[in-house]
Length: 375
Image (cartoon, rainbow, N blue to C red):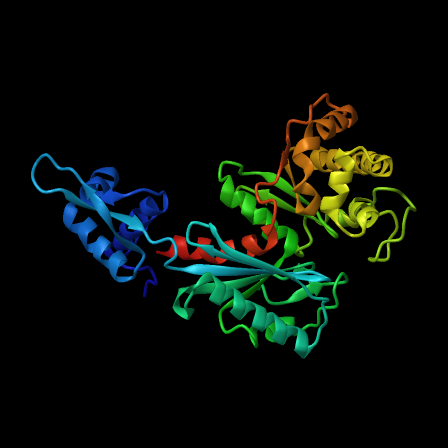
C-alpha cells in the first residue's frame, strides 16, 4: 500500500501554505487579492482564510475600496499569535529573547549567572524563563518551543552534547533543562544558532561563513541556506585551527589555536572586563588599546584569509567583537586583501545584522521557521 498522501490533500496543504506565506510577507490582503495573486478561486481562499482566522494567525485589519460594491474586508498576520524563546548559556551569563512569527524580538533579558551543573542553576534558569514569558505577555499556548545555544558541539538530535570544555556540561543537560522548562526544548551549538539569524535576515545570501568573535571563537558554514554540520558535527570549528605554531596553550590541549588570539577577553580585560569601554577607549586614542587592537586585527586578517582561501564565500563577522566592527571594516578589508594570493579584495567581508542576542535569537528562530513552513 502506498504511503503517499492523496493528491487533493497535498494540494489543500500547498494552497494553505501559500496563502499563509503571503501574510508573512506583510501588509493587508483581501480575499480577492489573494485569489488573483495565487491564481486560486474565491471559495478556496475563503475556506483557508476562515481556518487561519480560527487558528488566530490572522485577523481582520481594515478594508479596501471596491468600485463594484461594498468595500472588501482586509486581513493581516497576527505576528504575536505564536512565539519562540531562545536562551544563551555562557560561563558567566544567561541571555534570553522572545521572538514573534516574523522573527521580531519581543523582549530580552540578560543576567550574570556563573554556570554550574547543579540543580540550583537549572532551577534558576527555569525561574528566569518564567520571568521572560511574563514580561513578554505570553501564554503557554503561544510558545512553540525553546532553543538553547551552548558553547559546545551538539549532535544532530539536538539533545546530545558531543564535546564541551568551555563549560562543564553533563551528559544529561537536556533532561536538566527540560525538567525546568515545560515546552519543547532543542539544543544548538552557539555559532550555528547565531549564523541562523543571518540566514533569516538575508535569505539571498545562500553561502557564507559566520565567524563568531566572542569570549570563545566559533564558526558556521552555511551552504545553500543550510547549516553544514560536517560528518561529525564539527564543521566550522575555526577557533581550533592552528594560527601560531607552538603558540599559546589552548584549553583544548593544543597550542596556538585561533581561540587564544581572537577571544574578546583579550580586549575587554584591558578595560576592567568591559568590551564597550575598550572600544570607547580605542576611539579616544588610548595607546595601549590601539596597540592591542592593531595586533587583534592582524590575527583576525590571518584567520579570515585562511577561511576564505578554503571556502571562497562571504564571511560574516559576528559575536561580541563583531558588533563593534562596522567602523573598522575597511581597515580589516585592506589587511586581508594584502594577504590574498589571488589579488582578491576584502569585499567578501560583512558585519553581522544581529549585534546582540544573536545566539538566543537564532535558537528561537529555528522553531519559528519550522512552524511557518508547516502551516
